Length: 212
Image 1 (spheres, rainbow, N blue to C red):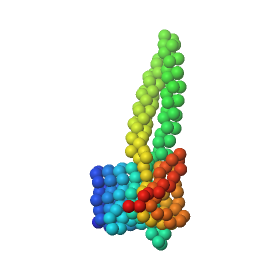
Image 2: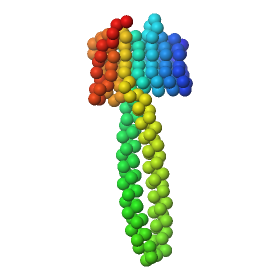
Image 3: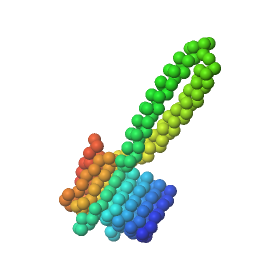
């Protein structure tokens, strides 16, 4: 088990009870019970066994979450999140804005450089130095654009891993559980049983899970 600490691994994490802990995994997390913990994984979170419950805390499984129960009769706030994180989405959108700004800046700079080249025979030494500075700036902007594209690709790959993510509860899901899939949120106001949550058109849909 893991208690009152931090556990991190590039691969899978297997634990009986995870309590008051922070857990980061590069693949899946398997446990019998998760209580008041912060779970983050690039794979799935699977909570099964005699307890199979997630109570309290914030559990994020990029590819999905499967548990026997969520929350409890005391209505402890329990956050379950599948799919990409809102912060990743916001970062991606900010990168889009930065890329557009840099591309616009580069295009204007290229026009200026082109105009100076046209008058190449008549430019003086000062203008030649200015042209060199403009070329240096062009290289800097291009490097910035390349870096932004790389960062966008990294986030895009991460987000694609969570495509089609779902949250499945094979028993009771109690009041005050918060269901999040990608950027969509659903607050559980009444106890539900044997449910599967998916995200469709930016809204969370509830499906019934067969008993057994």
